[in-house]
Amino acid sequence: MSAQERRHELIEAAIRVMARDGVAKATTRAIVTEAGMQLGFFHYCFRSKEELLLQVIDTINERNVHAVIGVVRPHSDLRETLRASVGAYWEEVEANPGVHQLTYELTQYALRRPELIELTRRQYANYFRAATGFLEAVAAAAGVEWTVDLPLLARYTYTIIDGATLSWVVDRDGDSARQVLDQFTDYLVASARQRQPTGAR
Image (cartoon, rainbow, N blue to C red; front, side, top):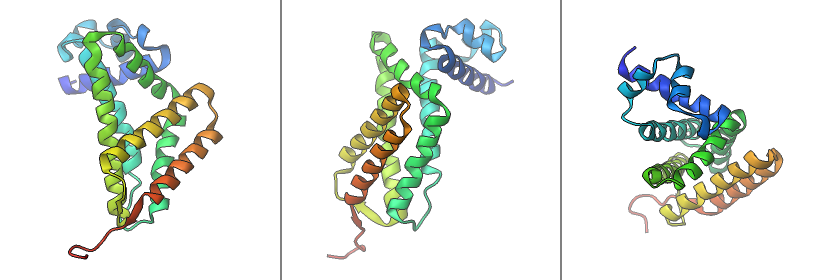
């Protein structure tokens, strides 16, 4: 394996260990054992466990973004596009509950450790960028513009999604979670208007 391939395998192993056993039990030894490697390979690929955790956060976020953006199609109806995107994200949540529980565990774990504060900031900066990209992609596909300031709408978006996900991780009440997400979709539809042609007054 190349160093890049080993890094990828270690990231995947870390996600599996933490989703299954929790962050506290995800020692470097447990991670390399899961990956079928010797301990020395970990230090060859990562300068520290903190660097690995940052990559774990980025990897999970990239998968969520891919699920959401992957269903957006040009010239689509706004409501249908929103429902498809939010629905794709929710399928990912229900298919991988341990991974989503892991994201909250990592947040709390890092907040208690000053040396890991960058992890939490990066995690929520990722959420902000993902929400912004989602809103921009949906608006472009549906030919609309947002009537709410985009940074504010992006923060609102990831706050709702984050809260709905955590609630479901706790109570597994999928019907209630979907009702919340339907209300969120209605709000976004109400916060959009048809894009004005360039040069129109």
